[in-house]
Image 1 (cartoon, rainbow, N blue to C red):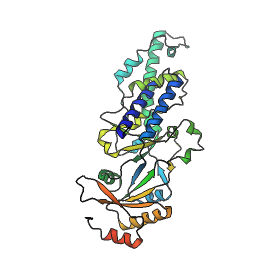
Image 2: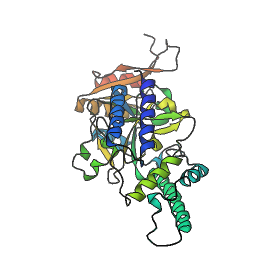
Image 3: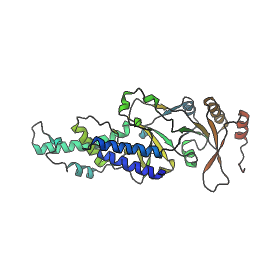
Image 4: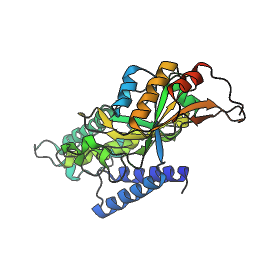
Length: 333
């Protein structure tokens, strides 16, 4: 299974699982979908993921402390990020298809049944819309990329190639902050297997119309108690515009509002093509302290593609780094 096949299969399985949320489905069926998702993700997850950084002191300090901070989707550079699509007509049509004798229309107040049914349907519509609107504020996300040689990533997220990138080995990624957290029994960042999910790039936003109503119905019939299997609709924060597909992004999605960062040990540091000397020296010092590799991004003048390459600076002395950064020449071999 190649990368695209794995991500497409993950999307299909997760969509089916989320379509079932709030419906009458056996635990065995849910368990099968969850296990299939885990198997698919484990087969698709790359060996390494990267975090691009501008050379601000706060980001260098975070690297030194091995911390990665989470952000709310509303703070991302794309203002359309993680806003699910809802079709009011589709929602109305779905909720008014419920039969009048459905348990949700139980009328303990003794009011006129027709009025009770209309009020209850309206309540479900409002609850569904509210549920979708709250999801964007409910979670925090950590974004990583599976690419290191994209000029766009370096331009957009590493101060126009003056910054750096950190490599993480996905074999050892774990979330120690969550080990003693009571919320982890339901938090999606603690799914079985690795806590990483690929972003799915589409031409349109995720249609959450029916899912919103089924979830509102489920919560209503269970007195507001949420279920424990994938309690958050992941596709609302994993589906993203195709214009961003060059990012090849993977995400950790956490719905514990108290969590602000995760602690991951870095595997290597990559310096940008235009890295400044002070930044290069400071990052080289951190690499030696942590006994991890140091690489320098370069332009391959003999490659027709608009890609970057990198060379190993792990054994460079301070004087060699000064010489290389100060007197950098095109590398023609």
